[in-house]
Each structure stands twice: as C-alpha cells, then as structure tokens.
Length: 186
Length: 186
Figure 1 (cartoon, rainbow over the protein chains, first blue to last red):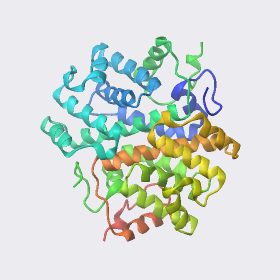
Figure 2 (tube, each protein chain N blue to C red):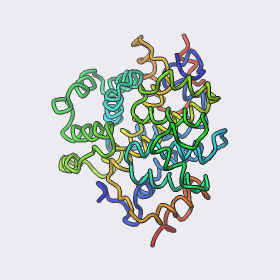
Figure 3 (cartoon, rainbow over the protein chains, first blue to last red):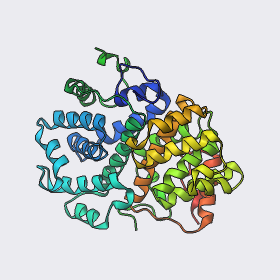
Figure 4 (cartoon, rainbow over the protein chains, first blue to last red):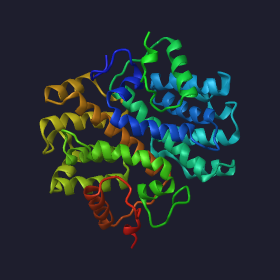
C-alpha cells in the first residue's frame, strides 16, 4: 500500500502525477522534451536509456513501462531484453553501447561516469548534446525510480497494464491528457 | 574539465542550465515550486533536505551551494553542519529529523524508504504532502547531483562563489534571471 493516500485506480507514477499536479507539470514537460523532443537519438533509443536505468534501480513499475514503450517504438522485444542482460553484446549501434554504458554509470552515481567512457562515446560519434541528454535522461530516471518506489506505489502484475501505458506514452507522449488517467480505469 | 563544452565562467549546475535552456526551464520550475513554493516546510528546512542528499551523494558543488543557502535562510551555520554529521542529534524539530531520515533513505534508493520511517514521520506530525515533497525534493537532488558530477562540471573552491550563488537563490529563487549568470562573472 502506498505510504500516502493516492487514488486507488492509479498505480506507480500515474497516481503521483495526479496527486500533486503543480510538481507534475514541469516533470512531464522535462520528460516530454528529453524523450520525445527533437533529437538525433531516436525515441526508441531514449526509451532504452530510461529502461536500463530503471532496471538497474530495480524499479519494477518504471522498468516494465519503459520496456513496453521501447518495444513498441522498436517494433521488437529483443533489444530491450538484451541491453538489460549485457550492454556489450546487445543488438544496438556501437554509439548506443557507449551511451547506455554512461547511463548505467550515472545510475550508480554522477561520480561513476569515467573520462574513458566519455572518450569511447565521442570516438563512436556521440555529440556533446547526445552525451548531455544521456546523462540527464539517466538522472531523470533516478528521480522517477526513487519517487515511485520511495512512496511505495502499487506495481501492477498484469502485462496488459503496461501495454496500455506504453500505448499512451508512445502515441500521446508524456503530457497530461485532459482525462488524466481515467482511461486506465477498468 | 567538463566532459562537454560549457561556458568557462559557469561552474557546476550554472553552465548546464545555460547549455540547454529547453531542459533547464522545467528543471528550474520544478525546483522553484518545491523549494520556494507555498509549503508548510520552511524554505530553510527544504534547503536542508537538498543539503543532506547532496552531501550523501558527495556532490561538492551542490552541497556547498545548498549549505550556503540553508545557512542564509536559517541565519546560522550550525544546523546544516550538524545534520550532515548526525541527523538524530541535530538541532532540528522531531518532525524534521524523521523527514531528513526519509530523504537520506531516498538518496540510497527508493526501495530503502521503510514503512517504519514513514510511520515515525506521521507520528511526529508530518502530513502526506510533507512526506511527498520530502521524497520528491530528495529525488530531485539525486537528479541534480548526477547531472553536475556525471558531466564533470567545475567545482569552485572559493567559498565566496557559493555565498554569491546562495544570495541569488535565496533572494531571486530558482527561476532564470534575464542576465543568466553574467553577474557571477569575475
């Protein structure tokens, strides 16, 4: 049961974003810009960054939601599975391997990001903005994961829930819809 | 030297917020709302939450900046020093001890926040919103600390720099000023 009183039909992050809409608005805006805004990284690649950080933070809700979103964007379920197992052998570009490695270091701590991993990213063609956005997306999911688990929100076990959520964030993005999350009500 | 090209006269978070203003705007807005918005926690108390998380993440820039801001708001330098040493004996209210404990747990991981620490906070009079805001402020500084250190930004050693920054965030808040950070130029 969540540590604070949230609407019962809204699990994970969804209840938190409805609970305090004044803080939710800039969180949504930041996420929309970083994950859906104009970028040389694809939306699928950016969802993979969200996925690996959430997975390493062991946040089940965020991992399931962003895995489902990445899978929907990539059109297959192999890549998200493989990056969680081993970045070095996952079926992503050489550049994405270096960026996912940086994201995994950010998950540990800002201080864990090494000059070596940055050099490898630049050698693989990553731009300053791509490195910046990778670090900030990873840091943002360190916020989300702590927010979701720190208040002990509910984690649905039904995969269909995450399919519905992925469909929403792939097709409508991270901005608030007029109906909130009423469409997720059973 | 920072891992990406930032303006040389802008150390720590200041260069990052100028580098990518589209992501900076919602980060500033979220921070302004949580740390300066209407709240039953004082601004000084909220800066103490920022301070303890930054300290435990060993982010020198953020620790120095928010320690200086807390000291300026509280009118003394003892409390910020003591909470970093030992929350249980620090000169803060019983409620703040429980909230700082929750913030310290969020710094470790969302999963580290225990039902026991939440119960203690509620017994000490903390409201749901105060618990929510404590968790979200702590999570936000887990973002900031990773952003600042993950890109290896510069950490000034001159205490006067942090006094100037504290003066700015105490008196003007976290919104962007028209002149950016030009006033910090030597």
